[in-house]
Length: 285
Image 1 (tube, rainbow, N blue to C red):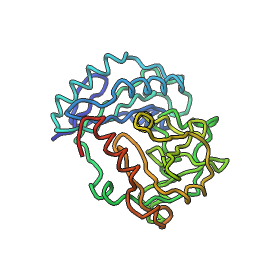
Image 2: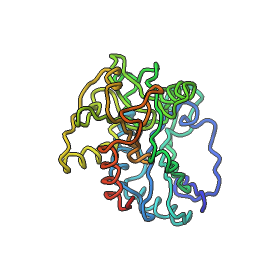
Image 3: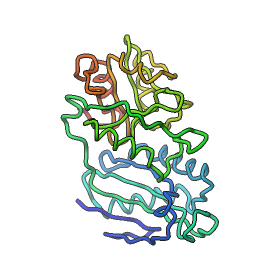
């Protein structure tokens, strides 16, 4: 069990980076989080595709190709030799002048962090978690597009701060129009009258890879699933709510704003999708 950090192709146990790296100064970076299953990175191609798409969206030229990332990740995973690993892949703008002008940064830095995965407690999946509909609005897509996975996460941090103050484990945000969007690090699904509903991408959300897989699984298994726009207050009418993410996987929500969702326990649709997703990634519940 170890943490290994790959910095531009060199493996380290610990790493110091320049305080003038614009990723540190301004959150001027893109990143992806990957987990391993049977020591193999899960959905790696999809994560790398999104990493490069995020970089392109912020005019950040990644100095290596996807095959280099695959090779370096394999080397770093081998050096860490964990049973299962949490992986964070980061590309920063690099070292530049202490102003926001990205043209002063000449060489992007690539950092691959591999550490032992810390999974959520089983109680989260058996009982569900508590979430709160917070007052912090999701970034407008035409300002800082939530579909671009950057190191600038203050919007999400502030939502989590509010959720913490409310005694909730996560926050659900709406956009400036009052439409449901997502959690702080997860996509949102809810069930009403047997139908699975999830905010559409044009609500201003991240196109989550787990979200994509769950939508596919739901359709393949006969569920009615709809992507659309719903007002925040409509979440209170849900019979079931669950969140999806790389580390969360499919996580049931038992309480919204301190009130039970449905029976206050994970519902049948959520439980079915939890099992289907675990089967998909090669582990049985």
